[in-house]
Length: 487
Image 1 (cartoon, rainbow, N blue to C red):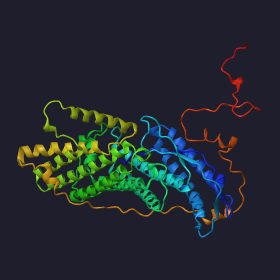
Image 2 (tube, helix red, strand yellow):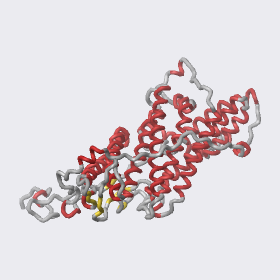
Image 3 (tube, one colour):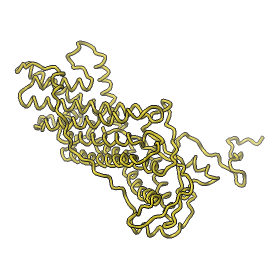
Image 4 (cartoon, rainbow, N blue to C red):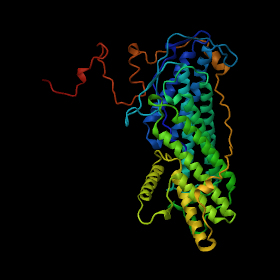
């Protein structure tokens, strides 16, 4: 948690090849320059080791924020809308040909990278750029939360933990605002998007998912139990030698309703993604599985907090019943359900060890949407309360169905703020009234075919054959042969 997005990559494109601006002649050139920076940064990010991608995310976000004002200015010029109070006149001279590699669509061939899609509309170029910004905000939230789950270093202090969760919440709400803006903008489109990544249903689903993750972080900030479990598994922790972990009383009923609200948002996102369709309009199974697991985790957390509320009231039997409800939501069997060896229990232990290795390496951790962490917390409380109930109170444990029938409604905490698209300032617009100081021939070498290969985002390992001086383009250079013999 949050979802581990993969950032899309794109090919090169020259705005001057498809657009002209009479009022601001340098606008297409500046847009091409900033887009080239975004393309290169996404390409570089893709080739970085997974552990090194987190520190590179602020640079990508900065490049996207620099590129979007120019892209939006061209879009406003095509629609005869003013930019910072000035009229911008943009004319479409030819249909743009842009390529993006989607990352949320389903793989046509398992194990093979998704093919790039052709974008022939400036609107969908804007959709890809803004969705990439939303993914980047979510990945920044993941980077902020990663130290909370590492068990090999020194445990975080309360202040450090609060700061990390607050920073992650801000990034998730920014991501929700961007995706919500895309979903509202897509309502006025009559054309079919080239892939499922930039469809209206996907944008609405990603907005709901980011809101659900931010709502759950509001609970995590004041939830002491995950930190206690992580501290117990940390080999570097020495605090247990001189004092027991402090578990303050929590507003259990409020937290439970917040978890139920997060579950509702996750269910809405899952429904929107599953209704996207089949084939090219289908989303990948990893995302669909994450959404369903996240919904289950939220409901399990809600059941745990209802159990904590019951235990604080002295109703240990009901508290254990709520914990059974939580395990049922997660699809985990209680420990006393089976005697001896259990295949499902062995599979769970193996999954725990694999997830711990992912957290330590920083590779694709949290893809289970927090199911493993919540299972550990519930099992810790279950062992503690079962011992108390068996030795002192001896209260009856109600069935999960009886308790789940009385679940209340959720309660929202956050409200998605409208996204304010960046706009070029008057000084930047005035500077672009001058004619461009160089030609915008990015990717037009050899009739435009040269730029599609080396300057694209492909990582297929294709290399260019060097051309001898004075020879026809494409002729191999035989003087560079590996053979050194003279006969």
